[in-house]
Length: 269
Image (tube, rainbow, N blue to C red):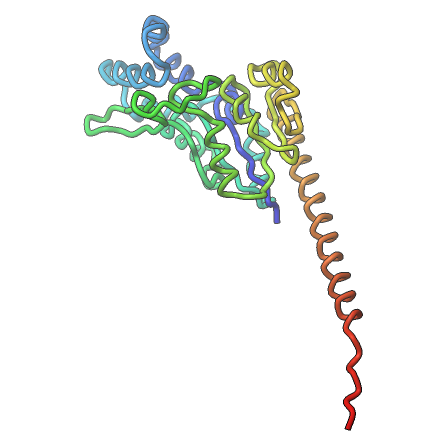
């Protein structure tokens, strides 16, 4: 079946908003968030905001309820289920956090479609407060990529997947600045699906010569579903034809090899 890895960003790709902003806004902490934003990295700020919300009496259940009503286009879930049913290996690479992502994916019934979620760790501590940590401890182990935020280089994660999965072809879907770096890691056999008029799309269009993969833009969940399933079908047909050609070559070589065998020499008595 499909030797295809499909990698999704999460915020503004699977869901229609930024999950961090959604939780902060819905729980009434926008003003404090904007006040603290210039003073610390985003990832550290979200951990601080979870502390503030906990101090205000907001519970984990309050956060979960907010996440469960996050806006998501009605064709996204069917698209993901279809890609999974076609045998694709689905993964998430996101600068959100594992608590937000898993809560939403479980709620809409597609958590089991994904083999891997690469994101910032998150857990509930003994006091019932949500803690959010960076994917990479950038103070001790900076990743050195100037295209990506300090806590996560999505390009490095894509390279790890490529090294493990070998010749499997990849489709990468994303919208943000952080989705430009992984787009540069894709080969001519791969595809990148940037969301039109979003930062990744703008960067790819300005740097087309740097992007080897085929580019297929999309605007909403309906287009995402149509283009993604079309690409999966196209790749499957190409891989099937390639396999048929390889089998024909092997069969021809096998017949030629047998035909070239010398006749046995007569043995004199």
